[in-house]
Length: 129
Image 1 (cartoon, rainbow, N blue to C red):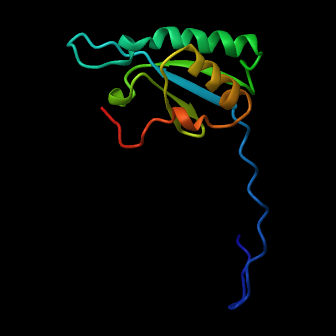
Image 2 (tube, rainbow, N blue to C red):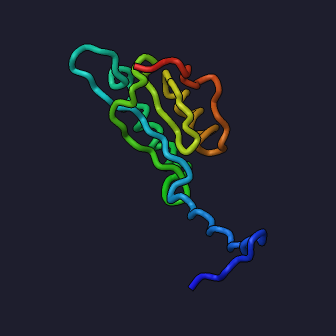
C-alpha cells in the first residue's frame, strides 16, 4: 500500500543514492598493438610493443600496478592509425601519440603517477584512421 500525498504537498525526501563503488583500477592505459598485413599504417610498425613493455615495467617498478592503481593493457586497433603509435588513458580518455622511450617515461611519471596530462604528447583530435 502506498502513502497518499495530498495535492500540492511535496513527497517525503528520499534517501540519497548510495555512492558508486570505487573502480578496481584508478587508471587504465591501452596501447594499440595492431599489426596490419596489407601495408596500411599501424602502431605495431612503430614500436608499440616496446612502448607497452616499457610502460608495464615502469608501472610495476613504481608499484603503481594492482587494485587501486594502474592497469597497462594491450589493445587491438584503436582506429587512430594516422596518429600512431597511440595509447589512451582512462577514465580521463586522454589520447597520446608517442615516439620513444622518454615519451613513455614522461606519460608514466606525469600522468599515471601524478595525474598530470602530458600536453605535448596529446594526439590531435582530428587524427583518426
